[in-house]
Image (cartoon, rainbow, N blue to C red):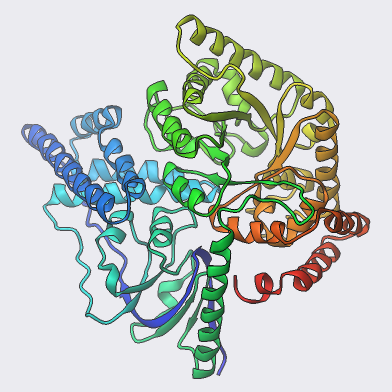
Length: 585
């Protein structure tokens, strides 16, 4: 019988098997109802009452999470609570109820759906994942407007795998974890709060499986492979036995990896690599630290803007940055300034429709054209720098002039803080993301102005190869092992070292185990990766020699195609680290 395997995204590692329970997609009944003028005030009162009930529910959920999982995970629901307290959003909804004479649930649903759609249309997974938080708040408020109780999850005492279209954070928390073996969802990404909660609970989880609900039946049994992001439906006894062995091997290897978590990242011939973590939301900090991250090599700040209806204040941003900086201190946190645009739009900042947004008004260009918005963020970052080790990174720099203008605005901001006698780190390090081909070409000039480079391979590959990674027709061209990309990386590192600055990498390539020996051989100083990849990358670095990695890099530079390079690196990895390649780790 043919093995029925479905592929998704690995969200939480581990292997498990068992019977399933299917949660049907949750539908809300929203009617387009007209409200008589004399009932408008009552409709607004209904909305305000529902928001207050929802706020109290979320506070209770947060407090329960604080006790059972940890305060950091409870902070997920602080974001939901803050959203309910957004006065600009509330006033807009109230005005629409008055002006359109439509029901509170109809207006609230459409306004929240509009925000949700903005996030869902992003190509960046971590931004898409924030849409589920909006959906969670939307459902709760509408149920409370309509007087409907949240859906209940009634399972038998039997241990089961939970299968659903999607699962909101508050629903995931309400489950009886004792009976859950793992999660499988049709929607969602690796940075969704459900994925974060699954990792906290150490439950295998696979998300983003296309057409999952059409392909699975209530009486099916499953194997979840949370390491590779796969599920096997109704496995044979032979396959079951095979995966039992994989599970045993995984558990043994997991114990081995845990032993190296807190070791300094130094190769066998004493080359030190700074191994840090990329994070999108503050709730990921503890996971990064527990997985052995030296620091935070990339904190993306966009979510602070994308989840609000108005521009976030200096104080709001300062509190977010300070929380992270204090948790990581005395180790560094690299905060990337606002990287909005392209496919990431904020509702609080006017953004004209563009024919090609990825080559348009985005990232540092928006900040330089809106210096007051830029200064607000820079003030918040500088203030946070007095609570730990902060470094500032400017994204999407494509010219020398852009960098000089960004530094000038930073200098103005720092000078004003000095006059106000507000403390900050006056020696704060400044860096740029190298993610545009023009920046590679003028790297020598840029290096003279900054303290570090961080290579953003995601955009660098896309712009260099003229291949949109989200376009299925050309996605096969999007390969970071293309010879042109490797030569660019070599050039960036050599230029940085020539100018006595350190060079790191924070793109997807940094967290790819196949690429680790190559990057080590190219003399990279720092790698910043997803928290779940930290121990794998550290194992490779701890058990490798820089001298041997240099020879591997030299060989790669002589090869002519991405496939040749990939095959060669896989062969080298199989010789040195067969468990990382063959054991589903």
